[in-house]
Amino acid sequence: MLLKKWESAKIMNTGMQKIGQIGVPVQNLIRALSFYKDSLELPLLFNTDTMAFFECNGIRLLLSLPEKEEFAHPSSVIYFQVANIHNTYEKLKAKGVTFIDEPHLIAKMESVETWMAFFKDTEDNTHAIMSEVQV
Image (cartoon, rainbow, N blue to C red; front, side):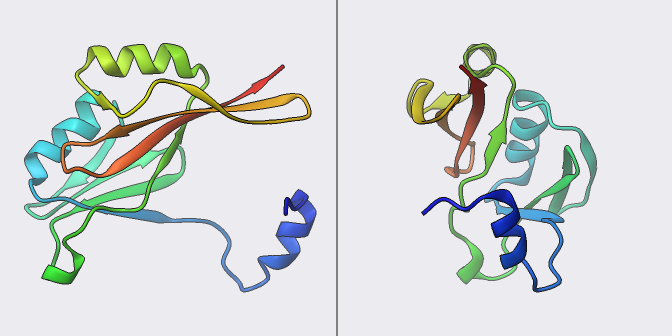
């Protein structure tokens, strides 16, 4: 069931206002830091020996070595919004990003098409680029 924006806003009445940070577990921080900084071109805020913080349009992305074994697993999928999925796909492929699939249409709702392409980071986490296109 799809909810209208105002209906979903009524549901979010818990005091939570927005996502402040997303954590991604990594096995090799130096390798992951290079991927997110150089391949995805996210601005690096700062890093330590066990963590790296990136800025992604108001949401902080935290890469961290797992503190305990139970945290050492691939992360949830992060969907990075892009203006032109085909151009971004080609640019990231040229930088060596490993894609699972090519950009493809996921859904069409009225005058908007949602396109996605999934990729792997250096730590075997699956993420995606997505674009909502007016048609």
